[in-house]
Image 1 (spheres, helix red, strand yellow):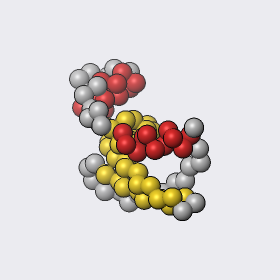
Image 2 (cartoon, helix red, strand yellow):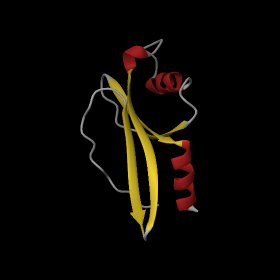
Image 3 (cartoon, rainbow, N blue to C red):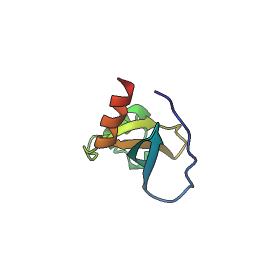
Image 4 (cartoon, rainbow, N blue to C red):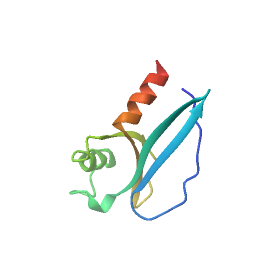
Length: 95
């Protein structure tokens, strides 16, 4: 599957992103969400960061699937989610 990069302006809080693409005349709408997960929000902020991410995602909305885990900073890790219906479209594109 091909990828394109789209710059997103830095805004506070959750970023709900809707992208409408037309490829070879076929229009599709994809839904993404970017959230910042702060290390201080872990029950044990000194634990291994992978365990911390797993803990923070354990109670996440099942309609959204982790799509990409960005580069962590000292304060947070950005995680991109894709809406389940968009994920099905993306999976179909890979078949």
